[in-house]
Image (cartoon, rainbow, N blue to C red; front, side, top):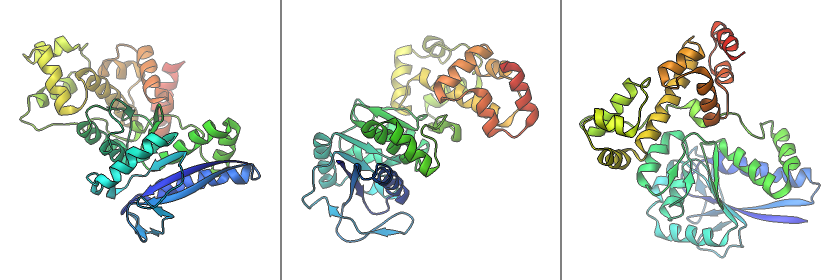
Length: 333
């Protein structure tokens, strides 16, 4: 029998679903393999005694970070309201750093990635988190590349996910790595979820929660970009319009927003297109023009590559107007 030991870190006000969902997914492997494959799951707490989650439900952990622990093949850090209370706990961050060196892989669900950031584990890495925390993560850990659109991101041995239920997506990905695609599909069927969800988390979120203080020069840059999405922007053209050098603009924008000017332009265009698809009856050609994609084929290609779902399928999911769907279908043909 092949056994893989997984540690689930818990701390006061952690998100219960972030450990319950992976726990249930991993547990099904033993059932579906008739005991030939198994995940041994251990909860590890930051303090002794029962730990209360953000929902008020309480668990009794198997270990604490102060106790001897077995070698974890995989360690998963959940998110939750309490994660921001533990970022300056050097005992915990040192423990995480050590685990990161010894584990085959380490993952964070939702804003649990902040704990890994505090442990110095995401510098130079590409990560994701819940869309509401993406800007904060990019600001706090500037050496990390934050991708707010992704359900989960793998960068080497580091795995990070979007919010809450994305822990299931991560678990299925790990199961597929460990025991093959068929096992992952069987677990997904049992849990009645998709093996891979179409579309990134940005389809549910405003990407541009990155507005800076109104008196900042970067605010004027953002306002200009958002008000002129149809324009063919480049870094030099925006800098000239704002009467700044391209080098200075690039530096201050990255410092205040945690992303480059052109990444902001691209995010703004995708977000505007998403809103048009959700709330208007405009066809692809007009949306492409208004959002700066130039034409419908280019818009379809970029949108599909970015979110993993076509504009037509996106509107079918998130817009209830049948007339708009018919117009989209006509343009897609």
